[in-house]
Length: 418
Image 1 (cartoon, rainbow, N blue to C red):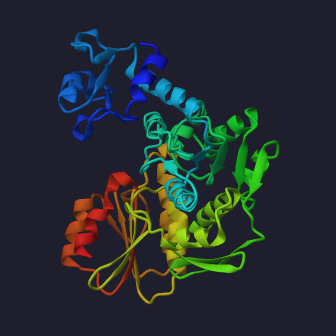
Image 2: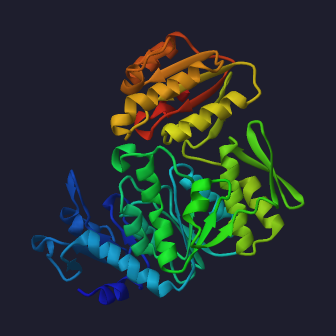
Image 3: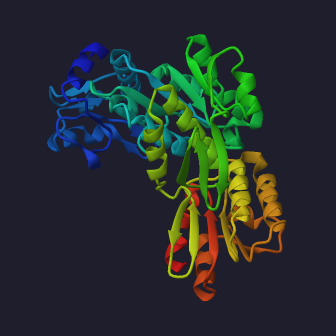
C-alpha cells in the first residue's frame, strides 16, 4: 500500500499503536519487531482488541483485508510520520542534548501551552520509534510540535531530523553521555550538532545558549535566537532555582543551578512565540518534575533528592556540586553506576569518586559493579541488594540525601527504607 493511501486511513482517527497491551479503539496497529518479539504475531489480536487495521511485513500474517502487508513495518511507520509532518504545516521545535532534554522539553511545553495547542514528546520517547509516534500523535488541532530527539551514535540525530523536519532547534548541552557509542566527547559534539547541520542546510532557526562556547561556535552560520541574558538573572538556589525575568521574580520547583539554563531556554522560546510575562511566570512556577528527575521527597525523617532517572559523568558532577552547595546540616549521598561509557567507564567512575571524596558528606555509598572497582575509603556495594541489606541494618535518619544513578540501577527502590 502506498503511504498516501495509508495516510487516508490514519486521518480517520489520528491513532497509531505498537503495543497490544495498550491498544485503542479504531487505531492502526504497527507490528514492530524487537530482539525478543515479533509484532506480526499480534496482528489478529490487535484487531480483536479494537484496532481498525494492523500493518505487518510477513505475508503469513496477512489473514484478512484489515491487515495491511508492507515490506518493512518500521520504515513504513517512519515514512507515514514524515508524510503527516508535511501535511501539518505547523512549526516544530527539535530538541536534543546530553543532559536535561526531557526537563527542558517539559518546560517549553508548559510555557508554550499557555498560548498554543502544543503536542510534545511523551516521556522520553525520543528514538527512531518514539519520534514517529510523537509526530503521529499530532492532529489538525495541534498548533506547534515539540520533538525530543535522543541518540547514542553518529548519524542518529541526522536521521531523526529527516523524519520530523524541525523549523527550530535547541541543544541543551554537550556532555559525557553515551561515550560507548559516540566514542569520545568530540563524537558527542559532532553527533548532537547534526541538528545544527540540518537547520543550516534548510535555513531554519537555532535557539542558542550564549554561555555555551560550543553552541556559539557551532551556530555562527545559522539563523539564531539567543537566550536573552539581559532580561534574565539567576538569583539563588536553595534548593529550588529562583530567577528574575524582566521585572518579575520567579520561584521554580526545580533544584540545581544547572536547571536555570533549562528554565532560561523555555522562557526565551516562550518570549519568541509571544507568550506573556505573567503566563510564563505561572507556567514555570507551577511546573513540578516527575519520573525520578530531581524530585524532592519528604520521608518521616529525611529529605531526599531523587535524581535516578539517568546519569552520566556530566550530569553526575553537576548534581553532586549542587547538592554540596545546598544549605543543610547533615548530608548523605547514594550514587549508582553510570552506563554506556565504554572504555572510559573506570576512569569516569573514579573521577566521580574523587570528586565526592573531596567534599564533606556525612555518609557516602557507591553502588554497582563499576563503582565497586574504584579506589576509595568510602562504602561500596557491588549490587543493589547489598546496599539494601546494609541500609536495613544501618538506617539513615535526619539526613538530606541525594540519590543518583543510571536508569538500569533503579535506585528509587531504596526509598521505602529511607
